[in-house]
Image (tube, rainbow, N blue to C red; front, side, top):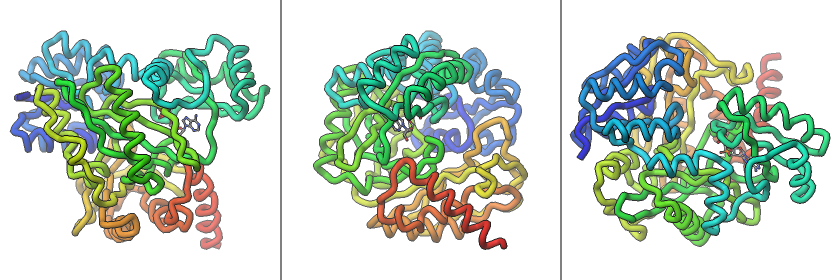
Length: 457
Ligand code: ADP
């Protein structure tokens, strides 16, 4: 078993990892930047080490700073969380070279799946359906035009190294595609250091459905059903749920089998997620795999009762995954709302300030994963996630009604949050009827803003 883990992350996920380690009797060292000295993870961990100044490039994205912190404090493992270096194969390799167990898959599988072009090719070779599009990386705008002619418009240009919904561009016709190509390439280069692009058919009115997997280093793998993350703003998830209201047992089994075939074909180890887009007929297409724990993992934990971060630590310690596929049941319904420090009335402008008062919701069926406390000032250098409120119940309606209660109960003063919009979303009739798609939140947002403006007149 691992004895001491460096938490190479911050915010709520650092707290989540510290908690899982403590329950397993693993000591923790939190790596923090100067902006995070007062963070909750630093307070909860056994030890904490400052790894540099606030800019991520000089702290959370700096492998030498993180690895030396791990070595100096005598750690034997490194948990990367999500974002930052979590999907960076070089970092994983450096950890291994320094005799630190990277808590995630091997650098080799990360290299395959971290690249959307290679990921698509790998999954297609394993017989997993993918979105129609380019075979490999696009060489020129002419090649993009040729492929678009075959698959039809609209099309989507995507950075191969992309993440977080950034750098994607939709083109509705040839003119738009010719104009978008150089811009998408320049954006990808600026954001990810690589300008490689791929082209996909842009699917409209689809849902985002993803399958969670766990695999040990002894060749045993299971899937834990799906999460539905169709409530998105600008290709970023804002509310997630499990199970998906549009996936029944037969479809779940088929998607799960595909996901397992895909990960077994590359000898994948640890927790991972295969993301799919699903059309109204229930056809699904692989878009990418995330080789790390995801923000929305709690909804799967709440419906299956499986502690995913604990299993990440056990698997990285070489333990066998003792869960069998037939034991995995999606017995309840869970919903997660991401609460961000943003002002939904001002186009989700990042909000700043000190949290004066904080009262998280509680009671039956409510879980809050957060690093907030009264008196805390979230640093502006990082993403704006403040808390994840997760509610669960017997049915989707139970979970959503409980969410309404929890969102009303939650008090965060001193800083604007996205709670007002989350309240509108969970009671929206289209969302309640589970008839939304990945573009629906944008439509709802327009309506919501107009209504708010009218109410002020
Ligand atoms: P990232 O890695 O940047 O998050 P993804 O490939 O996971 O990018 O896509 C993020 C979101 O963008 C998806 O959930 C979906 O809403 C949208 N998207 C991605 N590919 C397509 C596509 N081919 N057609 C329509 N929407 C897409």
